[in-house]
Length: 319
Image (cartoon, rainbow, N blue to C red; front, side):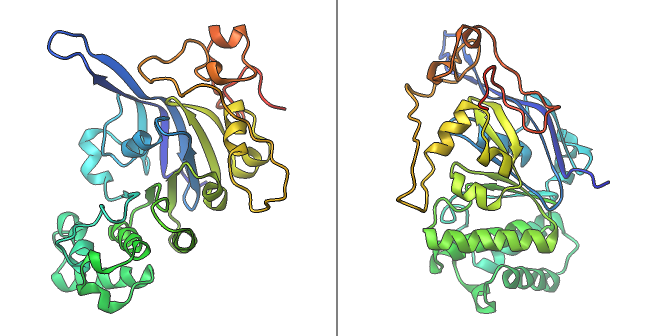
């Protein structure tokens, strides 16, 4: 049986904020509890409002930040600090902004070869150049682009360069942090189709972070919905989109634009603002905005039953 590329168990990430000179700092729990696994060739999407912790989760999986609690393993190896250097070749990230993620002073060839210079010091200059040109062709860039600078490319081309750079070390997992949100709609589809094609060719696993549910529906195999640092629902893409169980998921899906303007829409408008992560409500954190909340919801916090195929952290889930 094929083993997961990445496995996370009750991951947590806290930050100490505020306090000043004499004040006591507060604990901001950006990710309170996240458990998941990603198989080779599969895509796990993480969705939710801004501030739900999905980008923090991506940084932990990419080994940019160390978890405060829980466990993380990549390729069967525990992602402890002593293994970071070894594991960083197995997981790479594609950032949201293709304009800010590339060094404007370097030519494209140098940008692509840099990971090899750092992590494959025994490779010759000729081998690095051949590898860079091979990756350029794989993502749809021409040979003459090798000596050009980033400012000479469009947003879609720059994101292709970012994808090529992420693939230079032949990783097992790509973390895609809003990889198409900064692009025009027509270009978004090209990059998404490129990612799907690369996944099929190379057997890559993707952790896809996004707030755009229409994009998620196109690329994901499984979806996790996060709210205030916790997973509130998890399931296969079709099950979650066709029959959402958590009220928050149902509200998110109701706000997704539909291609048919004549189709009936049952838009759910949530009342109130997203609570501060420094003052998470007691009980269910979604209760202050939930139209189904009862006294039990305000007193107790529902848990996500990991044993279920389509669990939801809700006492009164949707039927």
